[in-house]
Amino acid sequence: MDSDDRPSLAVWKFASCDGCQLTLLDCEDELLPLTGRLRIAHFLEMSTAEDAREPATLAGTGPYDLSLVEGSVTTAEDVRRVHHIRRISRRLVTIGACATAGGVQGLRNFADVEEFRAAVYASPEYIATLATSTPISAHVPVDFELRGCPIDRGQLLEVITAFLAGRKPNIPGHSVCFECKRRGTTCITVARGVPCLGPVTHAGCGALCPAYGRGCYGCFGPVAHPNLESMVRQLRHDGMAGRDIVRVFRTFNAASPEYGPVPGLAAQESTEPPAEEERR
Image (cartoon, rainbow, N blue to C red; front, side, top):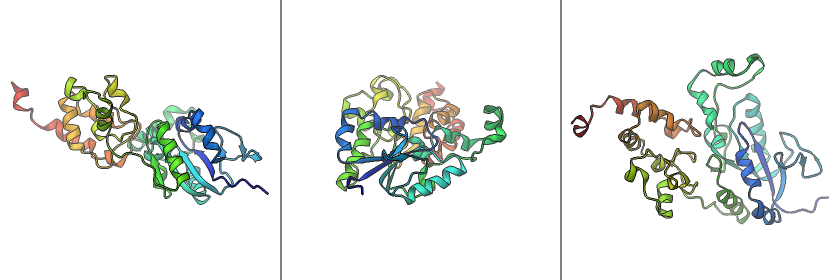
């Protein structure tokens, strides 16, 4: 009989690049003491064994105290498997843009997936896929969502530590602009007119891109209530055309519902007459 009373952790992959799973492995020094309090029971990226006793499968055996899920749902088999994982998991946390927003593969949601399939695969008839790429929360209840492409190592450790302590994770909900101010980075939009999605992007990256003079491109997804009307107006002021504005929002979190109004706002802005100072 197994006398190990540590809480069990499972890590799962759906349609994704594995980057968020690798973030856990990249914890390195922090990972060793963590395993003293948490038993990694299922993690195919790390081991092909279930609890180091039997071969692991994509479905897992369970039950698990905490499941971390990376990737979006893109096949009918994904739908079946994510419901199974939810049943055998006491807590389920989605990690990364694919799992929380459908990922870059969510671009298929705006086009004909059959055209994509025919263009990419030599024998498309063998490829079984859904017409859309959707986040895990579109199919099963999720206990917490950790954003990012990839996720931040410190935030991941906070989520796991919070689970062990029985509290809510202390993950900030403010925008990247707060992080710029915190690290003393001059606003590149105000100072240099560089287009930047920082005002509508969820914090977590440490404002890395603005610190090096590049505008934020939204890899941590939208804040809870983004002011898109103001954001689109500012991007146009900074020299972006309507088509480019739509494109800059359709990246890692392309299918986020918060970004839904962007195409309409971009088209509306492009039809407005130029301001008086622009006509002179």
